[in-house]
Length: 400
Image (tube, rainbow, N blue to C red; front, top):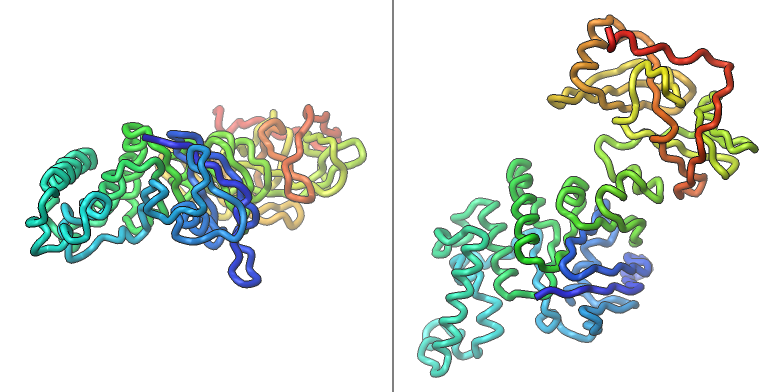
């Protein structure tokens, strides 16, 4: 069972602080939508409003076209997995998973520890609950753990129990609030794969909250980036990385962070950075920001439309790739980061130029351009660069 979710103009105020500023987004049935953004942007507040744990001050929420704003949490047919897992320490894993079904299907008297089993007419309900527990435990592979208590489990095992407790209700929508943040790096990678596979198997609607862009980019059907109580952009992981609509999106999505250079577009739309034409053209005039992802920068590329002289500061080896941190020697633009292969790094070391000023560059077609308001502006066909500077030397050290 799955459902679509419509979030329309949600507002939330805490005193004079406007935490959510008219947030709207549609989530398709069976979609994995991730709300990502820095701490304090309102993503967890929005999730709790969806669950019915926090009332909104404006706007509406519908599930499969039916408004649920007036419904308490238990009537919304959603399940929430919390960051802290929220398992009952005095109960076994089996009892923790059974809790939502006990509340839904057993009377108050029959849930009492001593006399519950003596209440007539509850035997079939108890048998159905036991069968549901076995089935969901098999799905998340925790059958051997059913009689243990949470204190006897690892972090990853507790996470599976929390997921099983959410799954056993067979909700229309799963809500997850940073469920992997308490795990170590290796286990987070493993659980990302497990959650992705679980979503594929269930075909359910997942709305997931995280501040970790890697989680957002690797698991999601779509990503909704939140900043300061607003959704800035909603897109697929590929689209939000390659085509950000706002400079804030470009800075947040991507590791290492995008390089941003301040420039100016003249009356013909030619973009100038550090007193040099870049080969970029646009329809706007005035202050602009040029965004260069670390992987599009290269050393001594004769075909580059944008050329910058830098001095290398340090390197970070990441196995096959190397991150180079460099100081911009042209004006006060700050440091730059470029990503090169290990082979290119070896060639650079052999050339003896690690301490020299070198030229790095990028093609205009790969650059991102933003206006003075931070919004993306289209770049036109690269303009011919004025012949006031010599062309960048060929990459002889790499081709030798």
